Image 1 (tube, protein in one colour):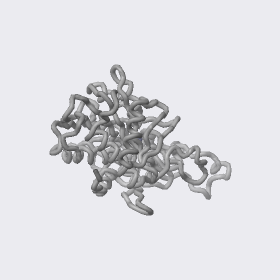
Image 2 (cartoon, rainbow, N blue to C red):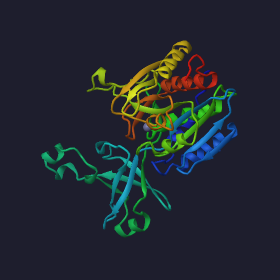
Image 3 (tube, protein in one colour):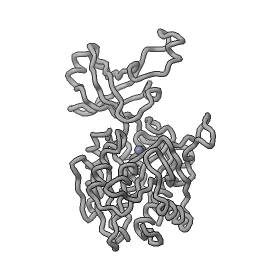
Image 4 (cartoon, helix red, strand yellow):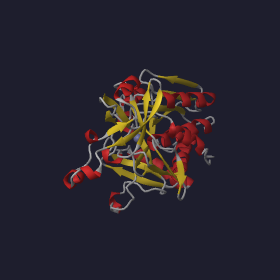
Length: 349
Ligand SMILES: [Zn+2]
């Protein structure tokens, strides 16, 4: 089964705003586009979107892909109209300087530019220090009076960057973490026809702030096994040693062996690798002692669920210039599709 990739859907998904706790635009888009393909669609109290497709067996397979992205929240508007902010999810402040954002106000988005004290009035010692969010501000080009009328404390500011394809089949955009996973899961919902498993495709909320949506979503579903689609850091860049790459772009789907929140069930881990070999799906094994994703919450749900994270390698993760490979997306899709459509029947989970 080849994914007929309509990457314009990935473009649409990355350009929607959806910081943790404000995933509404992404959820609405998915609800509208996936309803015709689903047996049922519902949203739970947390805001997770749960799309169900009936299978031919009595086993339940739970897929997760988190809809939320990292971003900023305004916590102060100063007398001259500059906005001070906190980060929502893990963002390295060094990646924020000189970037554009869209402040999500009650009257619609406003362009903002992130600035700091310019180099020619700082000392060398100042510049040698790592930049923190306290040294940064958002300039929305308005006076204090106007800014206070438009922007409220608690408004979110989304990183702003158009989706672009470049290089050898690569994509650069904001929010590829995790719209790349959302894209694969959405395409999967469309592609599956009478799958072996009853498939629960769950588009979760608030992963970036502690796997919060997945915690309640998994609790509400009697899953026999689970696969979590998410991006992972690819440190295959200058300055990093090969043993520290975690994953590399273009080397296929990252099948998680271990991360900070999970150690994959050995039967499921082996079954996924052997499925890849059988179907000529390119894969790499992901060992990420400092990362985590929805799998961390899902595998501890109820009395435990065999769970594996399927990861899309991503350079510059949690910045607005995240980079993924379209080939890796295709291999990740194929593995998810084969597992759900035909079942991991040679293993007893
Ligand atoms: Zn993620």
